[in-house]
Image (cartoon, rainbow, N blue to C red; front, side, top):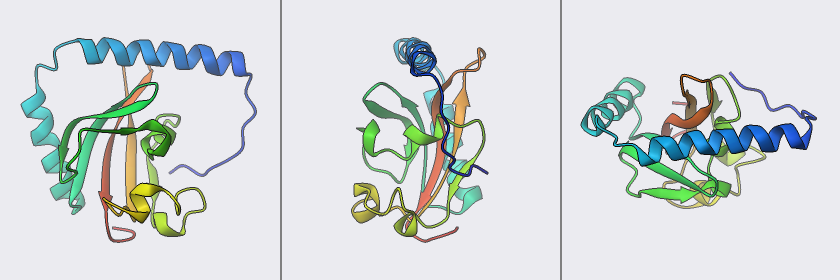
Length: 146
């Protein structure tokens, strides 16, 4: 599970890695998502297994998070700057936030203060075969620590 730490990394390296990641996201967005129904089935199964009302698969672009498949969410995209998943794609492991209302970074987030009233969040980065994190598989709940 991820713990937030302060890391100092050369900005040029970060910019190059982000450009490569965004190109990978573009490739996936432009290609036909041929198994969309299977992805919908997958997120419904994940929601049942995790006992959460919301599960989704998203792609994280430069400014937007696009929900490719979802259950219980009710919208198709979100601003990347307000997205929990924008942090998750920078990790290589499961990210769990047990109570977003008490978390120093997320307590004032509009998705915590308003719909969908996130309290519990768990997200896993989705990687390409080349190792680039392009999106997330996530569950959220209005109750803390599901």
